[in-house]
Image (cartoon, rainbow, N blue to C red; front, top):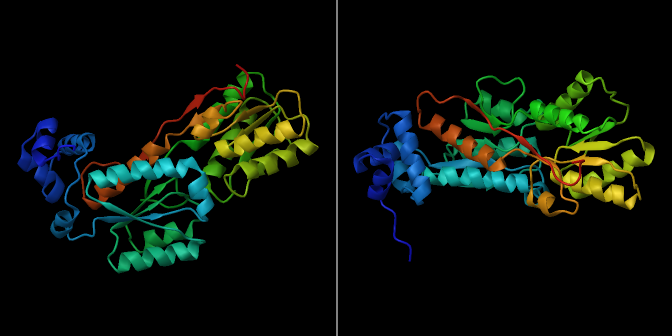
Length: 338
């Protein structure tokens, strides 16, 4: 049986006294940010989980975060992005003594009702939103009601909001330039649902890169899927390629969409090379044949830093930036030219 980790073990790893560890976990006393960071990093490394009930009594909080899951359970269980983001979120929250309360919703009205009920009944201290829509009514409601929350994504038109995101415009902009440098010139964009800000940001990066490189954005080459699934990628690519045989590259915003695109190319019997790219660097894309060229957006880090920002805000930590941008990088594989 594994030895139980104690506060003394954490103190030894962090190079501080046990009383300092206790103050970091249970007290509202101010500590230097670098000291707290060292302590919480040691807790994560050792697998130490503080007593949530004791923390709740000290802080007069529930020590529970609510998480808004995407509309429709298929998105959650079929798309690895959400699994990895939730893992990062949960690991950091647990290391800080917080529980996670998850709930599905079918629309914005249900989301708002769920959040209001849980927060007003003091069952959660704050909320994590895994996606952000254009003109997001749920985020606007939480902002107006002063409910603490953090968003994975970049909210449109809301100031003073905690968020964690990639630079999705630049990620797609760089990907287009990378494809053009490899000789692709007739490119199409296949995004997720059009109402999502991540889709709009990546589409803007796609269009801007084409303009800068002097390449045409031909009619009908920007498509939006109804969800992030292989079937949607297959459907959209089949429709595109049945009417436009000049396309030589399809850039998608998700690996599952890209896998569907590859299947459509094969089933349509197209023998000429068409480059295909995804996003998220999933295991499915890595082991698919041919393996997918993709963009790694580090979803674990997105979830981890979302929890970190929200908890830092709840704990009233000083000098914590309200935003955090996670880097991306291109991973070349077999669906594009070497």
